[in-house]
Each structure stands twice: as structure tokens, then as C-alpha cells.
Image (cartoon, rainbow, N blue to C red; front, side, top):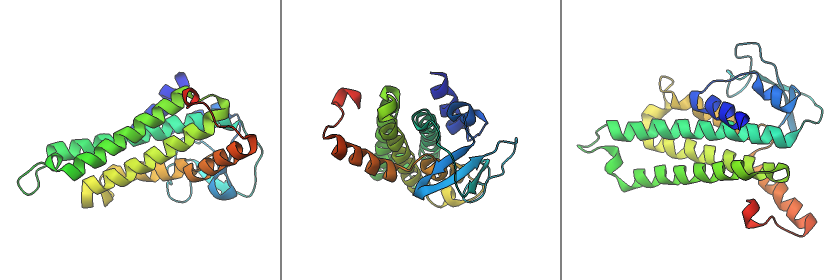
Length: 208
């Protein structure tokens, strides 16, 4: 429960901390596309690439890590990030007036925010129920939900969401980077499919 609370709060606040290495017990982590990254927390951002605030830099290779625990932790982080984006978009559509009407009055806007909330709640259910053998599915659901939130909330916010002054762009970058950490939603979905083919059975609905 502590892991879920801490990592969800990291996502909701846009912060980062050294606690990821407390969960996985190693600083070298697999990344999407067969790549590896070193998590070196020094109190400030040392990362390279899309999200320079994260203390994550690419390296050539790495060692095995406890993937299930790490995937659950990063999944909760993604969930918090998704909720932060949803809160920003919701506040925007309730507070602003466009063409003489609040954006929340438009059905298309409501549908995008509703789809985002459904995706996030589904990911939360998967993370809550996930045992070790289903952690990859929970992380995949959280990654997909965060990317859905990024896409829909960006559309709802319009041009203001692209500006560096608006906090949405930080959460979008964070979602993209965290989705790739310990396996992206696309890769983990394929991995889960391969496991089902190999075993010849699928998890029971109650397990999902």
C-alpha cells in the first residue's frame, strides 16, 4: 500500500525521488526497445532525452531486476501522472469560456475526459489486483491510460497545453518516459500475448 501511495503522489505532483531503486534494488533498468538506463538520483535532474528532470541516462547494458515490483511501482506513478493531467484539463474546461460557453458544455470535450477517467480507473483496478505474474498487464494498462490521458487532455486544453508555461507538458513528457521504463504498454501487451500462447491458458477474469 505504501508503494502505491508514494508513487501515485509522485505522479500527481510531477516530482521524482530515489525510491524507485528502493523497490527494484538496482539502478540499471530495462527500457523500451531493448535499451537500458541508469537511475542515478543526485537531488536534481540528470536525465537525457525527453524528460531531463528524471535522473535516468542511457547505458549499453544492464543486469536483471525484480520486474514485477518495479512494474507495479512505475504503474502507480503513471496512474498519478494521468490523474494530474485529467485534473488540469477538468479545471480548464470548468473555468474558461470560449465562444460564449464553457468548454465543458461541448459533448466532444466531455467524451474525451470521460474516456480518460475510465482508462485511469481500469488501470487502478489492474494495479490493485495484480500479483507478480500479472504485473506486466497492470503496468501496460497504466501506461496506456497515461498516454490516453496525455492525448485527450492535450486536445481539451488546445494550444495552451503545448506551451512551456503550462504544467501539462511536464506531465506528458513524464508519461512518455515512464511508459517506456521496464517495458512499454505495447511491448508488455505483446509479451502477455506470447505468454498466453505458450501456456495455452489465459488468466481468469477475477485475476484481471
